[in-house]
Amino acid sequence: MKKKRSFLKWAGGKYPLVNEIREHLPKGERLIEPFVGAGSVFLNTDYEEYILADINSDLINLYDIVKQCPDRVVQDARELFSEEYNQEPVYYQLRTEFNQSRDRYRRALLFLYLNRHCYNGLCRYNLSGEFNVPFGRYKKPYFPEAELYCFAEKAQRATFFCENYEQTMMKATQGAVVYCDPPYAPLSATANFTAYHTNNFNVDDQRRLALLAQDIVESAGVPVLISNHDTELTREWYSSAELVVVRGRRTISRNVMGRTKVDELLALYRPR
Image (tube, rainbow, N blue to C red; front, side, top):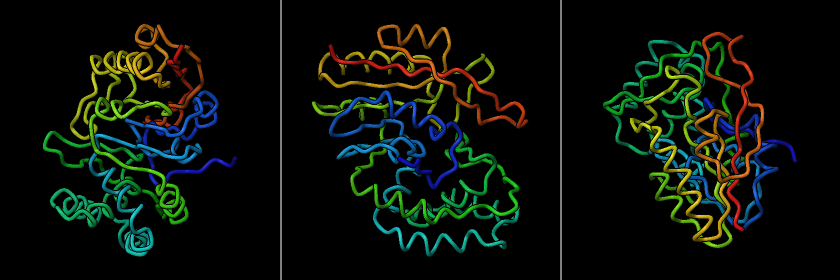
C-alpha cells in the first residue's frame, strides 16, 4: 500500500511512522482519533468508518469544507499559491485577515494558505487565539491539489468533531479502535510547546489520557494505541500497556542537522 500524504504541512505529523503505527493498530470497524492533526494515520489505514477530532477549530473547519466542496476549495485556493501571494507583506496581511475573519469558508482557505506559507508548518496561536507563526520564506510553496482530492474522497467515511480528547474517547464503543497522538511529552524541561490553539496539554493531561485508555479498554473492550516520546515519564504513564520502541524524526529545529532521530513509544492497551 503506497503511503498517502496529507495536504497540510504539520510539525510532528505521523507520516514517517505510518508503517509502524499501522502494523500495531488492531483491526476493527471504526478508527477514532482524538488528536487527528494532519490525518496521516487516517489516510493510510482502511477502516469502514472514522471519527476524527481535534481541539483546533480551524483544522476541523477546513476538513469539513474540503469534504463538502473539494472542487471549489481547489479552484479558490490555487490563486493564493501564485507568486504574488508568496511575499512577506502579503503573508502578514492575509494572516491579519484570517485572525479577524468570521467567515468559515474564507478562514478555511486562509488556514490552508498560512499552513503552506508559514515557518516550518507550525500551527501556533497567541493567548488571544490569533495565529502568530511567521512567514516561511519558501521559494515556491507546493499547492497540494492531488492531496486535497485524496483527502476529500476518503473523508466521505469520516465524521469530524472539534472537541476535547476526553469527549472523543467517550465515543468508543464495541468494534472501535482508538489511536491517540497527543502533543508529545517534552524531551527536556525547556523543550515544550504550549500554545497549540491556546489549549495547553500538560503533564496532568498526559496522565489522564493514559488512565482513560485503561478505562476504555476495561469498560468497553476497545483497544487504544498511544504514541509519544520514549522517556522515563511516558514509560511510567504507560506501564500497563504493551510498549514498542520505534525511531522517529524530530522535525522542529532551526538547524537541519538538529533534526535527529529520537526514540518514540507506541503503547498498546489491549482488551484481555
